[in-house]
Image (cartoon, rainbow, N blue to C red; front, side, top):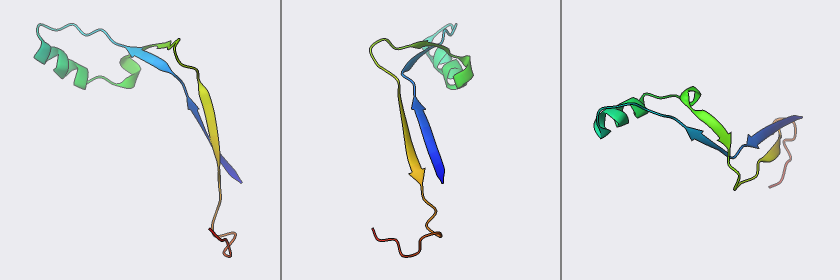
Length: 65
């Protein structure tokens, strides 16, 4: 069986961008990637983990919904 785990981390991402004006700042912001951010925990939320069992339908052809 295959299990799919998902970890939902309640983080806040921060990034500082130096620019001459709003238009330039937005242009630079649109070129950022997730690794450019500084991350910290969000104290107002808690982390959670979920998982689901992935079933291969080819194993059980008589499966009823």
